[in-house]
Image (cartoon, rainbow, N blue to C red; front, side):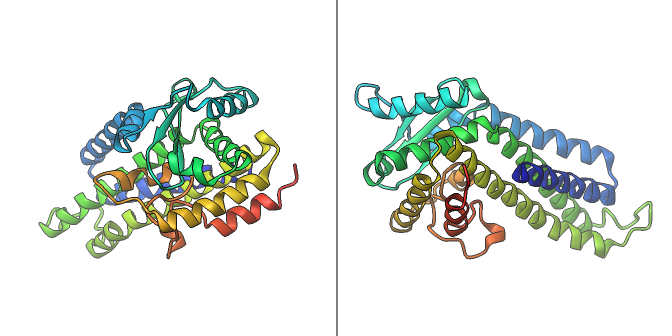
Amino acid sequence: MKNQLKTAALLGLLAGLFLLIGGLIGGRQGLIIALVFAVGFNFVSYWWSAKISLAIYKAKEADRNQYGDLYSMVEEIAHSAKLPIPKIYIVKSPQANAFATGRNHKNAVVAVTTGIMKILNRNELKGVLAHEVAHIKNRDILISSIAATIAAVISYLAMMARWAAIFGGFGRSRDGGNIIELIVLAIIAPIMAMIIQFAISRSREFLADSTGAKMINDPFSLASALEKIHNNVHHHPLKKMGTTEATAHLFIANPFKGKSFLKLFSTHPSVESRTKKLRSMKL
C-alpha cells in the first residue's frame, strides 16, 4: 500500500509540474499539440510495447519441450496470482536478467536470458519469475506508460519554451511573467520530470519484489537471485544500442550497468536496499 500511495503521489506531482509549465507558457494551442503528440507516441509504444521490446533484444518464444521446467514455474505462479498464463520468451545473452512486457494481463510476456538460467538455482529463478509476474499483476507497464507520457509532454513544452524565449516568443507575456523564470523552469522542468519518472520506476520495483515474494512465500530466494544478477550484470553489461536505454526500466536489474552513481537518476533501487527489504519481510 505504501508503494501504491507513493506512485499516486509521484504521478500527481508530475501532473502538477505539467500544469505549471503549461500555465507559464500560456499557449493553449501549443499545450494541446504537445499533449496530443506525446499521448499518441506513448499510445503506440504502449500498444506495441511487447513486440518492440522483444524485437530489440531478439527474443524468441521458448520451446516448451526444451524449457518445460520454465513453463511449469510460470504457470504455477500465474495460477497463484489468478492471472492468464503469460507467453515465455528467451533472450540469448550471457547476462543474467529478465523482464515483463505486454499491454494487459491477456497479452503479457515474461522474457528471461539464457544467462540467468545458468547462474540461478530453481528457487532463485522462481523468485525472479514471480517478480516479473508481479509487474504484470500490478499493471506496471500501464503505469510506466502514463508516467512517460506526462514526462514527454513536459520535455516537449520545455523545448518549446526555450526556443520561443530565444526567438522572443514570450517577450510580451500577457500576464507580465518574468522571462528569466520561464527559461529557468524550461531547463529544470525536464530534469525534474525525469527524476520523478525514475522514482516511480524504483517504487514499482520495490512493489514487484514484495508482491512476487508473497506469491511464492519466499523472499529469501529472490534476494539471493538479485545479488547474483547484480554481480553478473557488472561483468556482462549490455551494449547501448539505439532505443535500448529507454527499455532499461523493464528489466529486473538495469542491463547496462551494475551500479548507479546517482540514485535520483536510477531506474532501479540499489540491490542492497532491495535485498534488505526482502529479508526483513514477514509473510
